[in-house]
Length: 602
Image (cartoon, rainbow, N blue to C red; front, side, top):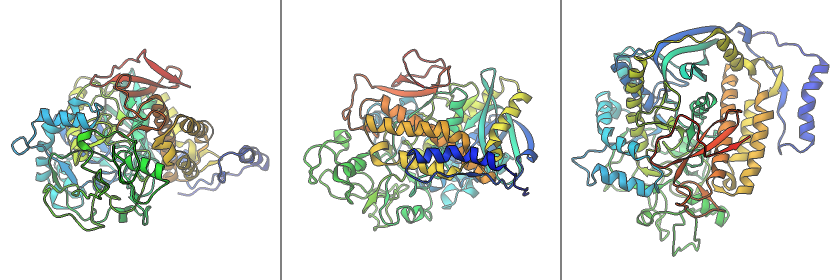
């Protein structure tokens, strides 16, 4: 329902707007300051407050969420799924058409050889336990999907609904989760609100599985605009360790109509999914970004590689020798010849190449522009830090799977076509069973009235502000800071520090003044806050890693440094609330305690 706009005195209006005008006059950001009165369409004081209880709560309804819910139910738990979008139709899941299936009877490489080759391409950045897990369980998950009809349609809602409906698992769609709730050092639930109904929702659960995907800065040209690292930031806010923020997904968009993500995907929306076999690569890093940086944005951007180049450009991101001649999907070979790899889902590698406009991944082939996945890391290389191979985070009772888990399944570079979708299925199943078993060992705990009220106030704060900044303006400002090639992809200390100063300004003086006039804008306000925190994480981790490796490239530290940097970077909140970074050596498990070898940032 609509309510009358609240009145505000002339004196208070001048007080509220004066600060913004002064900031603009002093230079501020080089764009119009969007400070304005709030005109709420709903009365925040009248929103209902609902409390729902379950054993295992799955947040997210993509591939990881599907298997988490199914396997948690099959392990004997009461399960509920909550999703920002629609089952099988939100996030990146509906756009993925290739799913990796390792069949030991039909592959040339053993599992040990597969893990070793992925590790070589990933320059040691992969977690071998999760790489092995992918190979061991992928075929079983693919066979279950086949039983549910997954390969019979280009749309996934129907096949995803089959196992969910057979088990009577309730699914709450179009619900924005904004807070994880922790008491006595363990997770006890989550909180958020419905987009369609005027309700604040509190879910009390013995365990929570985050299947919330990755995220970006809402760039154009790639369908990740509804993913904003919500799960990662919510977990960080309650003390969990997160990782992988320095890596970059290097997907480009086509230079013709680059903002039209549908056009960029060609016919992939109509393709039915299919399986892929072993094809280990070293792709979708920042090779093309380096070429654009050196050549001033040349239209034909191919990976520079090493050695004799027809384009005359040397240096750039290091690529292992055995991967230098393969090119990338739609990339270039070492001699500059254009290569178009098979589309994801095409297990027949001898199939004739498709014509221009039909080649996948999207954006590849022909003239391209960068930044279409700005803010997103390599699949499975960012998210919550696991403490074991069971998808368990550093917070008891809190699990993550898929792109919400920093499992480093493939490492800091894209290594196996189809592994992202398959890895989400594998990890979702493991997280679901593990969370269900954990739930049998703990008692339900109610969210205290005091905490409930505090969280509700935080959720609804943008609706109650009399004036402030729109989420769209803060998001656009953040994009102008973070997306440039010379900040996010081709990194240098002075430019990253300059960008960090702007991000800190947004964090401290703009995010606290975000306004919302309706429930849709309220969702945008919380997403914008999460993106700003993620931007800070990316800059701090990129500054800390003083080397170049895989999809992280620093112009001032262009070489791989194996002496100092055979380690992942974890981020957590320090005791004083500051963002704190630590090293975790490759192929070790994270500790739930805070490391003594840390770099703190105020």
